[in-house]
Length: 134
Image 1 (cartoon, rainbow, N blue to C red):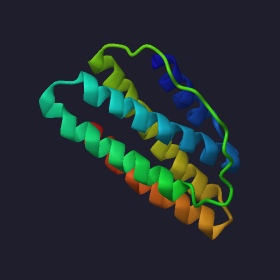
Image 2 (tube, helix red, strand yellow):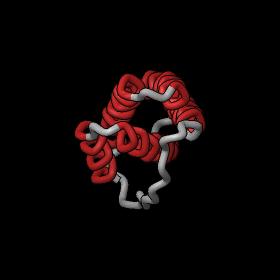
Image 3 (cartoon, rainbow, N blue to C red):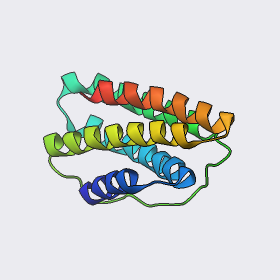
Image 4 (cartoon, rainbow, N blue to C red):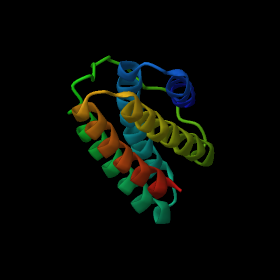
């Protein structure tokens, strides 16, 4: 999964076009949710609530972003071996921040109010997911 986290993070950092930013952010949110779910299974018991909160916020962000008219639905499969817990958590934090930044950039670039609203709402939830992971 490390390769997926790195790949999506790079795609988000390189994306410039609004539709690409929105679609890649959506993929990133799915990955944040999946990765946080895996971390909740791997981590020490005291860390589980934070990961559960991150899962909820990432899912809420995806629901908000799904309302963006410009969202396209590419399909990806992110199954892979998981790295060590702390390394994986650090990658997830980095990805969540990249998703948040991409959503804010997409909102700034969008001339469509519905896209801006969807991106900003998703960014809010993504920021909460990022905070929960820290």
